[in-house]
Structures are given as structure tokens and as C-alpha cells.
Length: 303
Image (cartoon, rainbow, N blue to C red; front, side, top):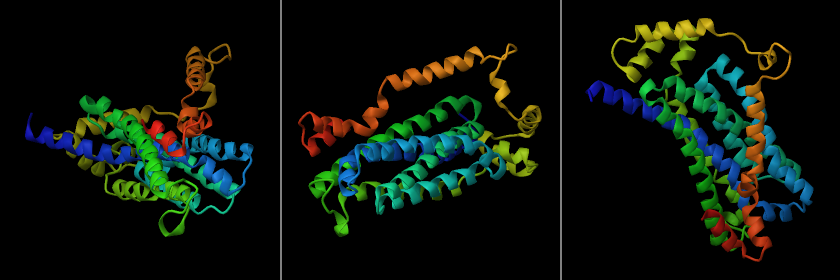
């Protein structure tokens, strides 16, 4: 492999890895509540209905974040959109950790859900736009790997904090309840994510769309090596063919939803029937319901 190609590949891996940290926070934010549900419900004297809202409304926030991520990224850039996501993750972590009531907590979780939605859309798009064609599939998979790693890390942290404190309900460092520390730990990777994305270049596609072709060429030369003028022309051509999507694109000539849309809806429904969300959020609660101790239930969840 030529030295130029090797350096370009390494550079692509590094910037893709930085963007994929958003996937890590996606998984972390999703699963961190697993070990804290019963403790926070007791701390706030929350009903099962309010506790369920505290858990599930993060998904609503994710939908809002995913819906708004595209326009934000197209207007302000992919990097700035990821910085916004990192900031939301950090604020949500601190707010959740120091929440004073259940509705306060729900708001911060909703904010974290918005960050999840933004990260789930922007990070894969950025990786796809910056990856060399021969590496795009492998680098795109970094996002999924990061999500799974984030879920595992969150569950592991829940376990170690609960074991160290004796229970999620008991005080931990500085007299702060252990369950609050579970959420506060997200602030560190959120800050690291923000710093990492500030150090990576903007997407060449975005720069070409903004008329900043010289900057785009500089970045592409690092990613691809050699003469990139043909690549710039290709990007310019595809941007010229773009048009603003609208809801009518989902409809066929007969005014009904296209078959591919029904397939997507069906897959989403089937995915929910798998029940994975119950495991992400309530596995430790379910283990405790059948007689396991808090520490054993968290250990089983990690395993």
C-alpha cells in the first residue's frame, strides 16, 4: 500500500472515530437510566406512570432531534451540529444528576433524547461524506460499534457505582446519591466528544455546497490523496441534482404510500416487538422483581 494511501486511510479512521463518539453517547445515554430507575422513583416519590414517562420521553426527544438535525447540519455544518449534540449531552447529564423533582428530571432526559436524535443522524452522515469509497462500509459500522460500546459502558458504570455505594439509593462521592452519579458520569465523555469534533474538519460536501471548494479540496487531498479536482466536480454535480424533500415523495401516483414506506413501517413495528427497549431500560428492575438483589441484577444486566 502506498504511503500516501496509508496516511489518507489513517486520517479517515481518526476523524470517523471522533464522529462516532456521538454513537457512544447515544448508547450511554440510552442505557444509563437502567440502574437508577427504582432509586430515582423513590427519591422523587414518583408514581409508576411518572417513572415510565421519565424513561420513555427520551425517545420522543430522539425523534425531535433526528427531525431537526438535517436542517441544522445543512445550514450550519456537520461539525457545528455535532458540537450542539455534545453540549446537549453534557447539559442533560448534569441536569439529570442534580434534578430536584421528577418533572425537572423528565425535562433533562428529554433534552438528552434530542442529543441522541441529532447524533444518530449527523455522525453517520458525516462519516459517509468523509470516508473514501473503499472504506465507507467499514467506517460506517463504527457508529453501530460505538452505540453498543456505549450501552455496555453505561451498564458497567451503573454496576460499579451501585456496588461501591452499597446501593443506588445510598450516598456516594461527596454525599451525592449514587443514582445521581450514574447520570453525572456522562458529562465527561460528552465534553470529550465536543473537544474531538472541534478538532476534525468540516464535511467536504458541505463546504462545496457553500462554495468553499478550496477548503474542500484541502480536506479531500488528506482523505484521498492526489488530484481531487474530479471529486470536487462530482460533488458539485450531485449537489446540483439535489432537491428539497417533501412528504409527497412518500406517495405513489395513486396517492397511497409507496410499498417501500410500508416496508419501513413494518420493520419498525417488528423491531419494537423484539422487546429490546425493555431490556435496555428495565432489565435490572425485572431481575429484582423475580428475587435477585440489586447488585446481582445489575451484574446480570452487564453480562
